[in-house]
Length: 119
Image (cartoon, rainbow, N blue to C red; front, side):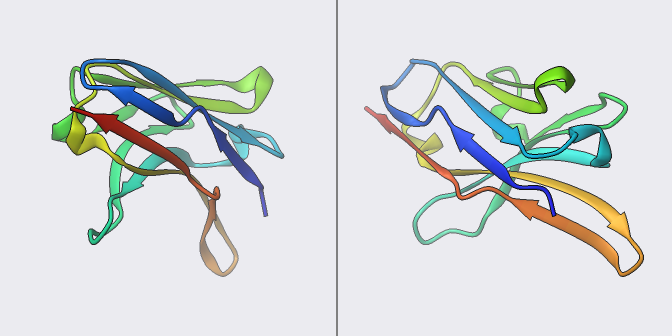
């Protein structure tokens, strides 16, 4: 299973920017898709953005126009560029990648990185 390690979280004021990185231990091209999820206290984990092996991207409505997902295959890393941050973006952000194996879908998750946006 691929190991995923996130970095780049932190404390930022509203309107500010952060870039999250997710480094994979293996080739990200082995993944059908990779993405970023977030989970705020007391809330369910939700999809923020995803990118497929064909570079098709998808964004949650609440981040469209503010966040950009990208990947660097040479570095086996995906990124989440976050601009125009709002206090409601405060959450733990998790990197995810999945593929299908003989037993079905196989997910890999990172440990999460905290993003805190102050008002």
